[in-house]
Image (cartoon, rainbow over all chains, first blue to last red; front, side):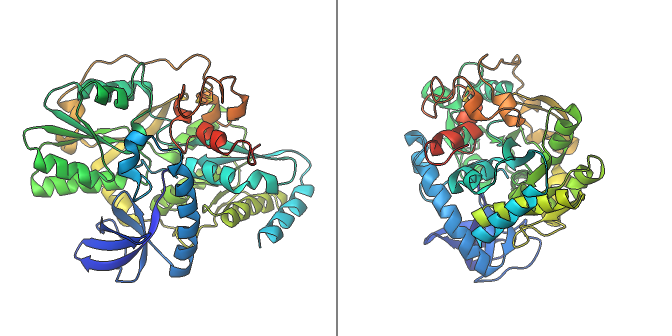
Length: 96
Length: 356
Ligand code: SF4
């Protein structure tokens, strides 16, 4: 799956932030963000970088849709690659 | 809400006296359309065609063979997104090369590749940089980190591709019969609306930047039909909660600082002019091809594989004789069956649920 995933910022330290996605914490990079973001904001995360800010309500919605898509993709995952994919749902090239 | 939009689509379609073909450019849309059973919700006479928007599927055989040849060097570590591992090259995939002893590691982010470079200063660490405009700025950002931190052993092999030049080339070729385009959501989050203007101005076709939910996609289809009925050709944005009209200017500027357009080979399609990204000359020291450049011939697609036609929206996966028989996600023949976003894989996964 190649998706950018809405994630909630829970900590910020300069260009690094911690986000919460599906209850898991992950470090992301903010250097590509075109605007200031703060704790509690939702951002679209692709391969470790925040690429856009999202309105909060839609972010909840999108998270539901995307987690369903990822769940599906999970069934197709090559076992050899599974470990790198299980938490974030993808290690992927990112498309549309 | 879904029913309302579906009803409106029926109404609009009844005012159009012919089959309407819409191309969903992006692989993530293909998956979402299959998964949500969008085709079931559309009236007869609206056809959804998949497009070239799966970066894994369009990575050329030669690119796969090249990265494998590079991986054979003892002092090299290849890093890649996981979904590139099983893409078949001329004979082998990265996954095969790994089991034969090449040091190939799956990373979630190019920044993870940079970290591997930092921890393995005696090795050349190469990131296999595939992906569209969604991904290229991240790779540019990672190179800038490498430059600042003086991590000299970090390289990339860029097979990045860009969507608007590819659409333009496809439209010019006359192969693409689409009456309108469902434009990618996340590529557009970076590049914004303007790069698609030529679709309206030069080809007089409607297009709508669309999100990935069922209601997003249906609304996108409705907006295109409205344009057709009203004789309009505009670039519209349905996905405003994520896509700003101007895109992400910061990401675009860092992408342009490091990369410049180049011609690129699209698997199954051919060379599309100006649709690739290569490092600018002042960053060539980050290009692994400037250090190691194996001479790899252009590979040939398995003869019966129709990936090229699928990627151009000429054929549906089910029109391929190998689909679901000789070619399955477990034993893929063509690249469109490898990535979970490939059209063939998406059709296969949801087959029997609600397809066609
Ligand atoms: S089903 Fe397999 S062989 Fe046929 S077009 Fe798709 S990837 Fe190629």
